[in-house]
Length: 110
Image (cartoon, rainbow, N blue to C red):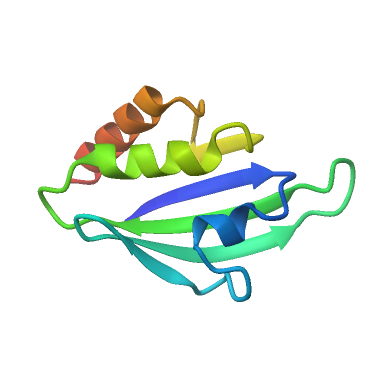
């Protein structure tokens, strides 16, 4: 399972990611091709900047292109995000880089 961690100041991001404004933690949605996205965590970190931490768990059906997830993430995050990490690896919010890192992490997971 792939873990994606997002750190942002955008209070609406978690709801937009999960297409659900009310209940976000525990929400599950399916992307085309059988990619399942679960929201495991959505918390506000108080202090300088008051960042919001969002954690997603991603499951893939074998044979599904990483491009589907990379494109979806890019469209949801463009211009809205402070930091994104995929399996603890920090990634720039650029569609090609997201897809590349997702491919590499999927290969590593076997």
